[in-house]
Image (cartoon, rainbow over all chains, first blue to last red; front, side, top):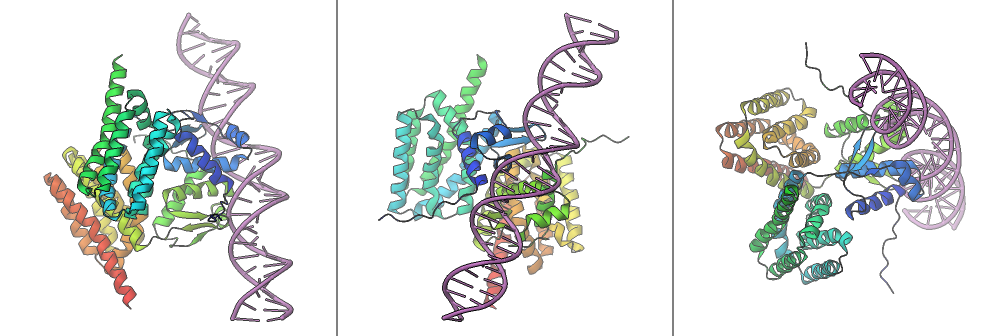
Length: 223
Length: 223
DNA sequence: GCCGGGTTTTTTGTATCCATTGTCCGGCGC
DNA sequence: GCGCCGGACAATGGATACAAAAAACCCGGC
């Protein structure tokens, strides 16, 4: 007998929102790409109303921009934007991790370890479109035990905005190995309960992704 | 001859969104109050389409909650939620203020001073519904010079979520005088360029509002 | 008192129509 | 040849009417 889960009863609007969010995060819709109401409603077989509501919601989340009478385009962040957002993440995530570690149970750590396993699998098999989601899930798993739902939700939104770019960074600078090592060390620090070291290390982990992206883009521009 | 400003051409959706946001922040719509599509569209003289899109956007901002097939209600935060959000604000705002102070020009300081003047006026005249907005504007004015638009936007959203509660705290605990003193001291610290002291003080300023709210609510519950 | 079923209300979603605005392209004048 | 002007066309913004589904409400019966 399986544990019966709450049957998922969704409205079309929320289903479309989730699907679009997923497709943006996975990179299926590239930066700056136009999202046309009509095309999307045809594709999903729904009317334009739920599509428009979904677009409004995604705009408020910062994933797309809606320009009056022009339509929706996938948000394109400048390097400065990404660095700024990573700075915020570094601040919030290091503090949240510090608060989370003393409360972590074995089950919490196991969940994080499992997610990390999945992430490594995706790294090896070049399953690029899932990197962002799995990276995000691993990070969030570390913070669960702090029981700060608002902070968690905020960090998740920041991941949604930045993951496309950190994924790009890992892909182009070919630093999958390093991502793996840093995550492993992070988990190890959590296991040992070294909250201050872990907080400092995750700060470094997040910011160094920004630095790597910056130097890569600078180098590209030189050519 | 006046400097010609960009003519504001907005869609109905964004106009309704702004109006509703304003009315929620001002306290016209209380916690937990239902917002009915039909009533709102009649009131504004528009169809339900722009109202629904506005509600979606406000939901993503966290000001309301939409429950499937039940409708939208103004978000009601628990004490824990407010404390958590204030903790985030303390972290972000103290760091942003620290980064902002070295870049502040006389014009920046003057703008903040003017806004503070307005706030004090509102305090004296018991113009409660504007306290939140003016408090928010004063804080944000201090951070402008840091030129971090993403952080600023994030902080603004956090203010939108918490201002109703800090306003309530000031009103019920009758600490208008204290709010005035703290803001004045804050501005003074900025003028003198004492960024570390200012950062520490704004942290205290934000968190102490939470503590005051907490002890007030605890005392209320005792009765 | 409360249980069950039907009615009503509200939200959700569709289809269709129109107005407004942005874009594109071809022609006209210089 | 080049720029710019204007109209055709496309997409968004918005209204209206209507249908379906879910929640809330009411009310009689036990």
